[in-house]
Length: 67
Image (tube, rainbow, N blue to C red; front, side):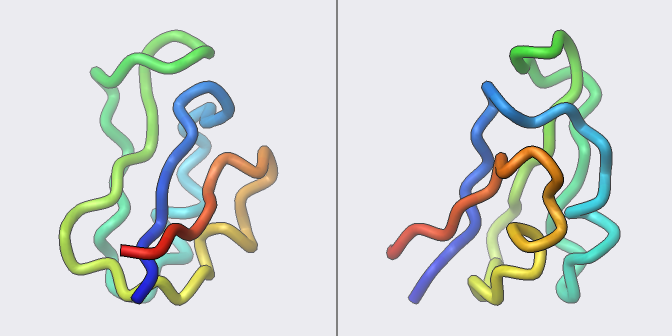
């Protein structure tokens, strides 16, 4: 089984992944630290590893990892 993992060094909190997530479990945390300052995507429990978020991410900030 896979789950999405966000690279905080690449994420700029654009929200495309949150919009594309079919389970709606990716959110943008405006208080999370990232390389771009404040704001970063976060994945909640329940990710099914479909990879839709990784496909739409313009900054290649999302990868799938085996759990």
